[in-house]
Image (cartoon, rainbow, N blue to C red):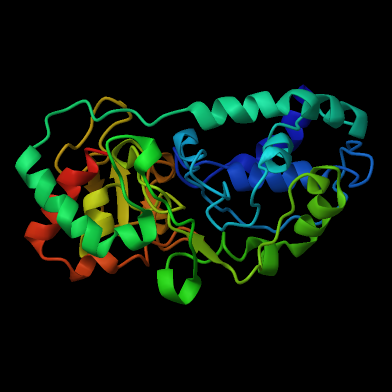
Length: 313
């Protein structure tokens, strides 16, 4: 275990505290294993792209609605293969992977049982009702509809091309542009026999996620570049450089729905060395705040109503 951590460690250093190295962990686990035997190698067997790619992994409570776990929709249907790979730090043979697979349906069933938390603060019911109407007209076609219980919810599982969604393209193009050799490894491995990865089927893009408990899932966009839902719905409010006010998870912005943050006038290039790791710099590669500008068409009153409605999901 310690030996593996020594290999993984340098690959998992992010530019900003709080961004997740999920992408780096997965590709490093792949690059150090034989695709046929799963035997570990301290030396890389495949080249790794020299990229720092931040991730904001989706909450588990979305899994029961999603056909594909990943933002880019590349692994669909039976999620066991990719989930097992993500936990494969010390799985060194196909026999060990098969043993894990023998009970992984139970883990998958548990994940699919996880439900979103209820909003713990006050909700303006009248304003939320107005927001429900706006949401149905402007958002539900991509993100689904929400009833009093999950049984009556709908979720379309739609994948959108990059020129439509407009968000940072790096993760969507990871398996087609930056590291296609790692997708080939996966599909030829034992894990690929369970769940295929098809990052180019039918095109690189992103899935619009279900929004159950979205208020609790900040920061937002797949790379965590936007601190609040208010800024997701109004792209003019997205800071170029920002840092959280603190790291107290109970310190929550009830109006903007997200982390209280401070907008800065400088990024990593001009920050002191001991400050850089606390700054989210959207000018860095794979960290951009662009895209998903659909909320810009709403009026301020409509956006306020939608924010209130999202508290009810």
